[in-house]
Amino acid sequence: MSAVIETKKLSKWYGNVLGLSDVSLEIESGITGLLGPNGAGKSTFMKLVTGQMKPNIGRVTVAGQDVWNNYRVFARIGFCPEQDAFYGDVTGWEFLTGLLRLSGYSRAEAAEMAARALEIVELSKDKDRKIRSYSRGMRQRVKFAQAVAHDPDIIILDEPLSGLDPLGKRRLIRLIKDFQNEGKTIIVSSHVLPEIEAMTSRIVMIHQGKILAQGDIHSIRDLIESYPHMISLRCGNPRAVAARFVSDASILKISFGPDGRSLVVETHKRDAFFSRLQSVVLEDGIEVEELTSPDDNLQAVFDYLVVK
Amino acid sequence: MATVREKGYYHWDGQLAERRFPWLPITRTGILLAFKKRGFRFLFAGAFLPSVVFLAIIYISEHLADFKFWARGSEQFITITPGSFKVFLTNQGFLFLMIAMLVFAGAGLIADDLKHNSLQIYFSRPLRKKDYLLGKMAVVFFFILIVTLVPGLLVYIFKLIFDGSFKFFLDYPWLVLSIIGYTAMLAVFFAFYTLLLSALSKNSRYVMILVFMIYIFSDILYGILQSIFRTPYMSLFSIRANIVQVGAFVFAQKPSQAVPVVLSFLVLGGICGLSALVLNRKIRGVEVIR
Image (tube, rainbow over all chains, first blue to last red; front, side, top):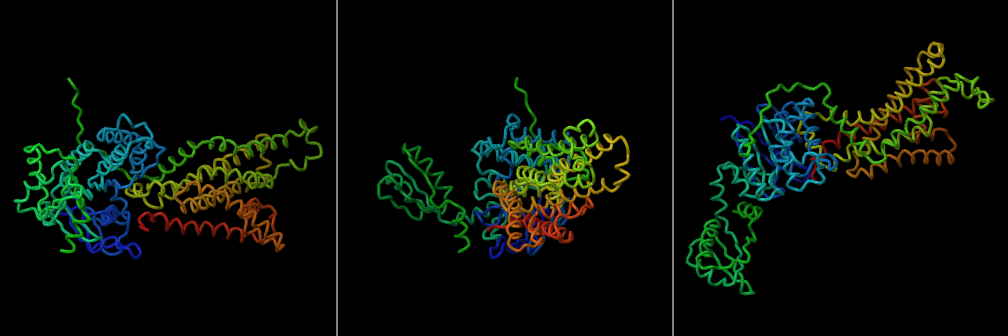
């Protein structure tokens, strides 16, 4: 399969700050997840791919054409930025039709396409409300709608799931997968692994402006599994829970909190631990008050992988 | 039974033609947003007041016999000449109204886009920087030309109608071109002036103050420097005085200041040049992380 988006030795810096360094990627049609902690360079990469920034070194081609200063290519791209990017005083309908008119569609076409896009994101009923009155989730959806309304071949989504409730996330993930089935090329960025995992198995890990790992999610998962996770559990009898896990080879360390009601477990196999914990809780009738992962963030995982 | 709605992806089957005026949606939006601002409609209507007054003066000048009781002794002041058009289009009150209009309609043109991060959405579309800037400038063109060029030409036509002959046209055949040229110059200058200030901040209220204060302050500065140095060249510090100088030249009138008109052209042109430089730098500046 030939690459739809290709970057060669792509570098971008902002004064002394390195945004992206020597990134060479070939992205094929389907969903590609861009995974990295905040400030890793995901948004920089997306802005370079959408032709909004000129790389300092290297080049980006979309469908074989250079993207920088080639505004005709932009008609094939849909971009959903991370931050809100609209006037509060306009309605969802005005926002969408205005942008479609900017894309070159006639008034009638813009109206038809905007209506369709709003229906897809389930905002038809609220289309005449000012965006200022939209909830965070609705804003996220209208932003997504503007990215797909003009039927682009390439969809670039920067943290599209942030701010959505679980149901909203599921709906949007389903929608993104529908676009994949239509043969679109989709790049989705996130700093939350399970979100990316729910959409695609093809991921690119980016950290400090560099590609850290690239490939199938399972191999990336293996990398992440090698990182010892800390899980904190708060319940009535933490020592009873600890006793059930002591014999487990994947548990590296168990410690107890000073209040006698919490324990912290360190394990290589986080998913296996959660799965086992579920059955332990059900079998022993343990009332769990709180379950957290103090270091369950990509930054910690990435730092660990970089050092390793 | 519930209706099953098809919510799959929608394919557009049409052919996307390259638009001749890709900046037009930006202009349309800018104009509509200006009219949504509280008080702007009142101000916009007020900007036509000088035109109405000038039209009344033209009518009186052509019907002096009907107004001889009122106009006794002031006939020479209400004789319509190209100088009258110059006074109409360069008078202080009229220019002030235009600035007031730009404070509302122009201050947020770029500032609001910077504030709302809209540039990244605009530029992910088939839109060039020049299309974007032209679209924004056209908003200022619209408001300036609609209160200067349109009334200027209408008043000229009414002058011919009230006169009942083409004598005025034959006496001053270049006057129409002067009206068009001067108002076009005014529109271009105010477009660059407003966009320059609008691109300097994300806060449109701050830009509103800048648009107003720089215009007023330049005139105050001129007054202060003039009283200290006693030289007409200090008028070059005043935006208003430079516009009046250029206006006098375009309408073939004696300049109010004993300063070569070319210097006023250079000052106004310099501000436009500075604006072009700043706009070129700022309108992609959204990418910079500080």
